[in-house]
Image (cartoon, rainbow, N blue to C red; front, top):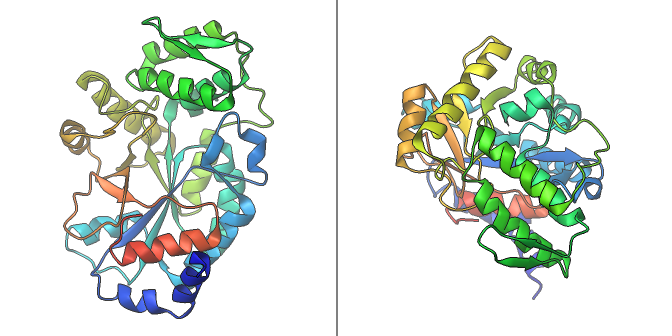
Length: 331
């Protein structure tokens, strides 16, 4: 029997919705990045983190019809035992701060009454450049070279797209350990080594601060996604604290309000958060921090290491993942 038909039947009959009532209180935090009319236009830079505007709109309509959207501040109260969330509570989040978050996603979310959380990478907005994973991805996919030679002498051939992606993944492991100026130097050096040109973008890549402020005026929440998008578990302690503190301070200065929510980048390597980054985030003044670990958020969870749900590229897929999450299944 067709698995898709079985999934649709279970959802259509309401069996999973009924069963989820016995799974206990919780909230599903969904993780998005970019929303565009034509995701194929930026495959060499953003790759698979783009959702089409048509699919995203349909997914949000499903959420409004079948779930209860809540604010992240409500989740804080829930975790502190000060508030009860409605059944099947959902939070919508975005990482990085792409221009389409304001120009496309906001225009879909606001009419539906969905308050989302937008975690911005400060350096990318200040300098209007893509996060470093996109810059490296573009360099590896468009390089005219036949291979890349790693620092230890290992050669990574470019015989196929898959080869290029493997080499990109390896380079990302090196770059994710760097923050600030050393990270920028690594990207510049590797791009020069590959003989790659800067990405030829069809539009401005990141939001402006005026657009970030526009999101806040529209009832959305703005949080930090670091200064320069490193893997916080693999940079040294001083760099990690600087990424947490400086990004918070910078966003607060631009918005004129307190910033208490954080999102861990996960560009390469695992883990992407550890106990010392949790402690540092608490000391610096964050109330929540979301990760890319999959699953539901339950009442006893640590607010500074919250799990999220990855959305699929289909409407039915997202609905299925959410239904499974509310049943306690990891997706």
